[in-house]
Length: 163
Image 1 (cartoon, one colour):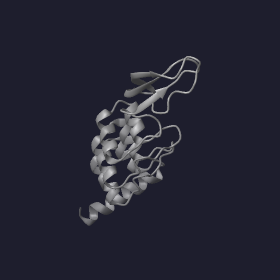
Image 2: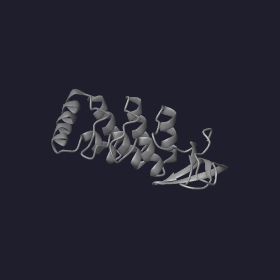
Image 3: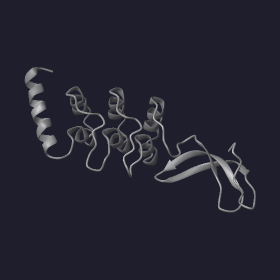
Image 4: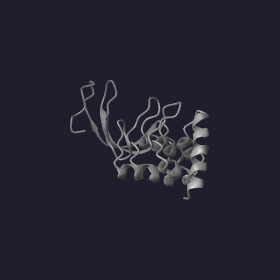
């Protein structure tokens, strides 16, 4: 990129930043991967938070933008940032049905603090038998669990630890 183009981009990015929304977020929101790369090359923080606390990676995950996600991961974006009320990029990708992107984040090392596809879970009602299962899908905040065994006891005792 020649010097004049770089100066022009820096001025445009500075004006955008003054408008309140981090320019890196605008690039992600608009799906403009070239602008995102330019922002990252100019030194923008890949973990910059917008007014609601989201990082660019969370915004890319929410929109299912694989190339933007790949670019942010490659420059060291925090895979496990969890702004209040949003969850991590992986959790957002799973809730919004972007399974390919969620798998890419998992392979890059992203983890959840909640449940993720493939996790083994133990569910126990207040009274009665609990059950072990594997999370098969997440749709928004609803989990699809395949039950693998019934555990616990009818009087509401704790489920077995191996679950």
